[in-house]
Length: 44
Image 1 (tube, one colour):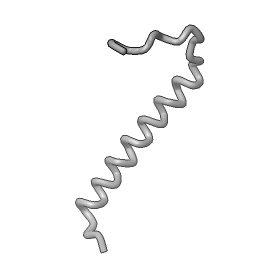
Image 2: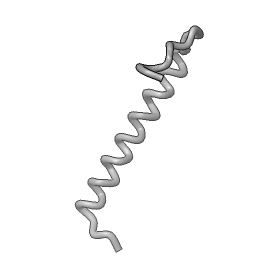
Image 3: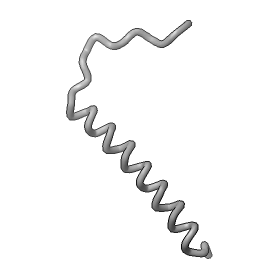
Image 4: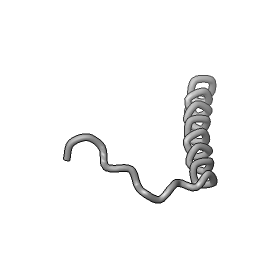
């Protein structure tokens, strides 16, 4: 297969898109917080 798969015919609902965006944002913030905590606090 070359290129990317054809786009799906059924549209993605805004709610699903928002949920995915929130999930990505949450993981990014969580990773940033964990890195920050690891830098400031010595890990036992």
